[in-house]
Image 1 (spheres, rainbow, N blue to C red):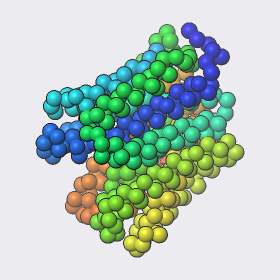
Image 2: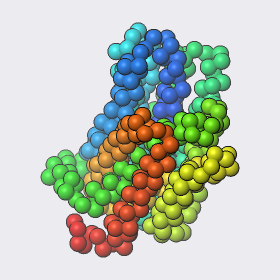
Image 3: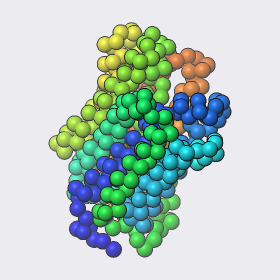
Image 4: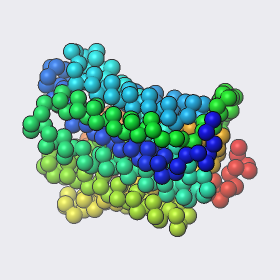
Length: 398
């Protein structure tokens, strides 16, 4: 077993950033080629829906299992295995003879991506042991790399689509993933937390741990809010603000850019300002952005709203995961799995509810859904996270 001093911080942190970049690239790539997949295979709405549901299903399952794997068997096994699954998924989509192989490819990418997303966050938390504020800052910097993949890949895919069919793009993307795979194999990682085995009783007690559940519930609404913005804002702008399709996509890119740049800034700010104060400022920005979406359909207003929303969404995951890491130092990966699963359930359920509300009551209700999510975040922060930040909740509620 490797001791803690046997790994190199920068090399391990680079591995985590590469994993997060990989997650961003493959997730965005699938969305970019989906119209081409539908056209090639002649998929109807039900078949297309199966692909759209299998992907988040795989992400959910990957998010649930990554924690026990890294706590028991180490990060190398997780990073290498999940990268191989992503490669198999990409190549499966590139050479799929029909729908079943496509579905398998989407599931493998979702499972591998979900596990890498959670695993890289747990890995950064593990190697940032000295102070909670530094841990949150490093987690914020990690999140920047998902944004880099999410911002850069659509432009690259649009350029390549003019000269390559989607099959070739998927094939070469899969081959490119071998580059981080080799790096993951070459470096040393922190030793597993529970190499002798994970006590099931300790894992099950997380379900009844009120502070941990409430932190997961915070991420439930945080993830839901981010998902609703990503999935529905372009449609909202087109339907309710009379914005053209291209302008709506540009506006959505502004949200992603704002979130990414703010996380880069938070990597510095969180080292010099208490994380809970940063969180409160972020929630205020979220509420301001959601209210601004209710204003008149002026470009300056809805663009300002998306900038504020990006800035406000940036701190939620890094700060809350920093607090989660304080609860279970010996089973940190498992604790991260627990809260990530809750967060992704929020994304899936609130997005589904948004579709129902939009169908029955109109897309103009979108800002109110965002206000509801931001309000729930504020209530949880004021009632529970504030006590965790002060250290009092550990004495009375666990």
